[in-house]
Image (cartoon, protein in one colour):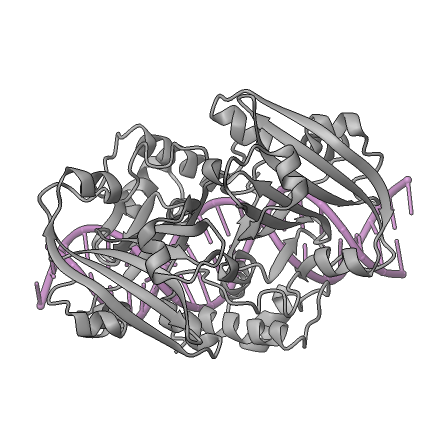
Length: 240
Length: 240
DNA sequence: TGGTATTTGTCCGTATGTATC
DNA sequence: GGATACATACGGACAAATACC
């Protein structure tokens, strides 16, 4: 899986941290120690550490060392961080899941859709509505807009499995960047029809735009989540 | 402001992109071209580009070039991304804002607080409740927990201004990493007392843990937002 | 207090691999 | 196949912050 050297080192260090071989607030072995251990250059070790820092496992302290700030269990809840399809996230959390396609259409982008998705007017797209069940509960209502020229020959059958798997494995498309926005919106009648909202009158909405390896935005998705089962994680570093 | 070379290059390229000197979907000059232009090594240029990619301005395409995926105006909405105090974010968006401290207490962490904040039992902390008004509207109710040994001599007067400014300018503390979680929760009576929720029965909750330059978590904050004025932005890259 | 070793941060130059055109 | 462009990796130099004696 891990192809590059720094990726292997990253993965190994991450495992050690997650298994608490290195504990919370301790220091990692110094860069020079790791260089000897892995028989690589300092740059390579530093890249691995940089990624651990990016993902909130460690924090570098100039002149001191690299401190572990990972607290076990803290992120073990159901999460949708990074770019991960729902299927992947659910599998990682050992939940049972199912998708039902409630609408599958081929459309041309008009003014109204363009305003919402930023796709240019006139583009050919697939529009899909999907309900996501996790452990038997209807938790998410997805509205997907895929550029037809990228996600070509999409079918309801594929949409019921994994669109991402299809794009990557069948079409060789690489998903690279996703921009996301989290908001809270009032529940619509459609939301209430598909999701069991109880007495909540609003829900969590994740709007996302996804770019492929050519830098083309080919997907706009609005995911409407039942509020009590929703969590979104994030990590930020202050840049001086 | 920009102290390092890669930081200067990053800032300059970002400006050019934001001013659309390089437009959406165009390619950046090649790394070698930039090396000549800036008279630096390729590593340095690559670091600058790497940061632009991290922040969603560009996307590197192996063998092709670096494509600009920044769309002006798209992120101009009120956003709370990166680590930014509310005061900073609001100032950047030219809004009028005010903070009212409704509770200021010094506490010792007990079992209940520890479970919520992950601070160890027995730690001395400040507990502060603040209502944030933006353009005259009560939009956010903050519950702050600060480690007393780091945020020493905090006062209600400081809390009414900017705690972050106090920590950085007066105490010389550097905020480095923040872990955040966004959820949706049912509105409590306290929420309804301070925020004008209309007929919303829930709100957006951002829970965050902040670490200083020593890798010590010194702040836990729960920000409860009026749902109609809340937005949280994020950017993710797929790691192969 | 001061000097030395350790550790991380920045930067450079070079070589090789891989993808695109 | 050759030229161009990004990706990975190595090794070395010096600076800055910290730790230790």
